[in-house]
Image (cartoon, rainbow, N blue to C red; front, side, top):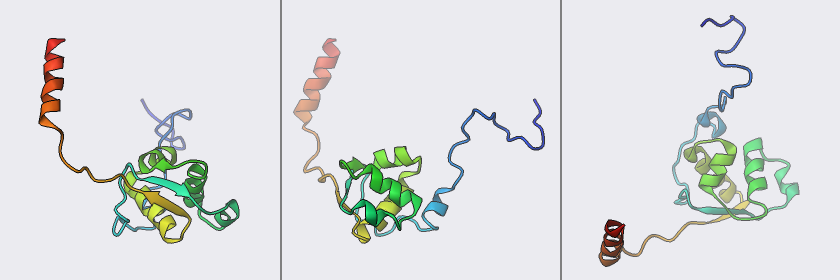
Length: 127
């Protein structure tokens, strides 16, 4: 199969995926000092639409997505089609600027109950 010089190697109806690299979206910054954000961290907007007018596109989109209800970082990444690492940097910026607040899941107090695991295993074996 050969392609014309001016045509991309994918069909016009095929989606080539995100064309902007994640480090371009975050301006080369990486995940340092990110408020201990987890993929299950919930984010909610606390600023008005007027405050979003000066934000870059990705920041505005995050604000739009978390305006009506809390949304997790993993959901934001899926909607934005960005890596979790990039979303953590963007959300961290919005936390610092006071545009959003967050709530991370509590750390597990202890490991799974061995008796409960054994009961589940016994139940599976009976199937």
